[in-house]
Length: 86
Image (cartoon, rainbow, N blue to C red; front, top):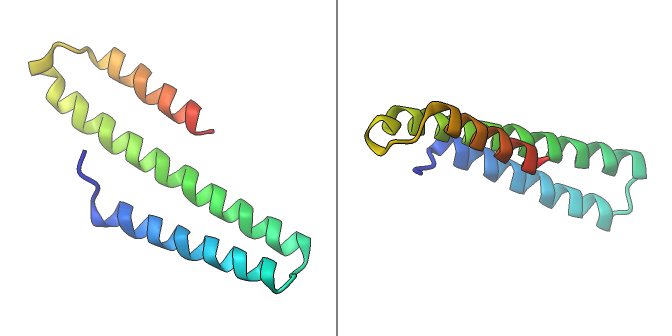
């Protein structure tokens, strides 16, 4: 699968958030603030995983006709990936 610039930029933002988290911990910021930032990182990762799975699913469904897999099989696989990511 080809990962577009949008997906890569999302990961770079998440990387920045994680670095910010480490800095917050080094500066001994309040637990509440650290956990809030951790939740934001988790949410960003979940949204990025969903974007990647949905983009991949769309590409696979377009290509499936030549490969013999059914849309139903591909959708089940996509749902399983999303469930695993949680």
